[in-house]
Image 1 (spheres, rainbow, N blue to C red):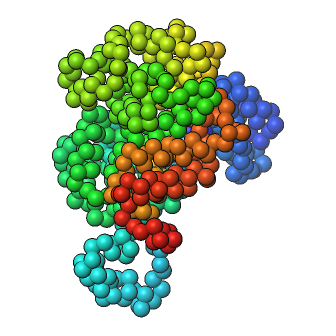
Image 2: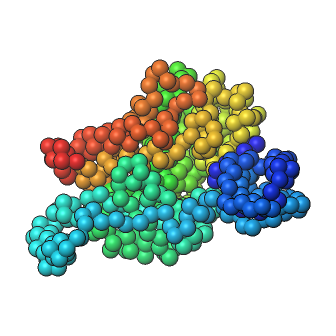
Length: 475
């Protein structure tokens, strides 16, 4: 699959050039011939004989960047002063900070925000613990918790290396839904220790967003936390993916004229995301789902070492199909991939039902390239931002937590997830819906509002909201 230079691989080259048009011409030609894409040219300083410029260039990857810099350094009249990666510059000093909501301008202010005035607020919470939601940051704060064992496409990189991702997650919470979030990276791989730590720090937070925790440990951690805490616990790698997938599938079915209950769905990759996708599809009414992992199709009656696979086998594959992906994909209406690059072949797609729907969500390289699949697929979705129909969790988690926090839900249940999926799907109007537009853009401001409203309604309907409806007028 062709990979284009992106802003995520963008370099700022500070160069000293001989002050002549010919020198700059050679520079620009060399960058173009090397496959670089010049985005900006800025003048830093100029003298009689030399000029210093910053050249911003998009490259394919780090190796390509090094090769391009070496080519420029070899040019006569060009001196490479410094090379900066724009992504690293954005991360310098971290990407988030804390600001006070009220200013402290004098001694009177100080006496109210801190001692002695704060003591009365503490006593009020001790007498009525529910007031912690009214009088502290708890009402609008989420902990983004990770142990760094399953970070993006990097795997087990540890808690410190996971921190930039969790910071980014906190930024998205704030930008898209006004939710204050803080990254908590735990230097422990012990599931019980993680449960104890998160439980102990929960008084400061209105919700817990679990992130990038490896399977099957993530299932255990989430289940235990849900049992012990009275605030929402949401593993975004599972449920965020599942919610957005269902939103996309609801609209894809409209495009191809099929009903959920009539679909044959093949899911490849029965880890955290694959299991969650399957659960929400079953809850939404899909009846025929076949899960495929390293051992092939999971089949009822077989014994699996992984207890999650055992559950999966008992709840899916009603026809008892056996074998590899190629064996079970015959006549499938939908392929859902949360696995690895190249798993789905063109030959497999050709054997699917008429107007096949393919969600190839492995990142950064999907299970089949959109270019290869395009001639044979009616609706194609990936996890990438450079193709149509991106299945991106940002469409889900800000709005779902906004709604859960606003109604002070005890949990985020299946009905709330289903409501979130339907809300995301509804943002794409009937006049906009097409093969290449089944989910809205992550920058569509209608999404978080629609999701939060739908989640609040589902929370009241299922009895997990702790606020009165009239109190929501205060939000």
